[in-house]
Length: 281
Image (cartoon, rainbow, N blue to C red):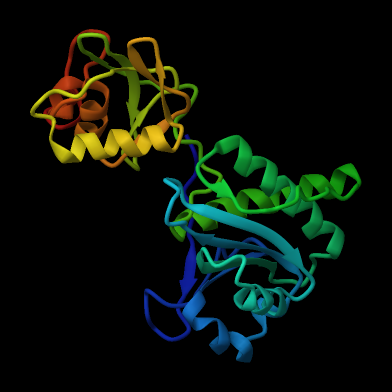
């Protein structure tokens, strides 16, 4: 069982949709969230002008996943201003900067973190990377790497708290409650999580939508196929990666290719429905 954490989030202009400065008060890492529209107003603050790494978050018009660009700089604010003028990276609408409150990050530290964050983003698979080049990792002594891994854990927590769970796995490999959804040709496994319902990789879906599936089911499955998350294998569709849905019914509808009540379609190994376990229990 994980211990609780207390996060302090300061809003300099008082708006919950504007700039946020987040930290765990006992740690040295500080995370600054800056909407792109507020970037010029940040020139009066010193926090973003430090050595650090940064993330540009957004979503392209043609991609199903949120997108991210990961970088590092000796003055993050100056680097963000360059990105703001760069029309080749126009996908982003929010920047998040990670700095040290004690000004202890060096160029070598942030280059190591940039490379590590890039690799973890690829591994987790929640976000599509917009980096054109693979960041090179600086060579550091083992004790320093251990400290940076502690900084990374703090960064991971703060990013998730601000709405960017880029380093959080979609599902646990040790999931305690696995649910199954079965249909004519379909056989899917998944997990009910804090963020929604995760359908696991290699789950099988019915190929053809029912006549009454409706536009919602058809469009959802079409998007998943176009983005390479569902592929056709013989007479079925197959998930090639874990995928999170906003509701159990969206997950079940995708698997069964028809309108479905996910609360009753998803069942555990004993036949108990998701509804019985999570809403009636």
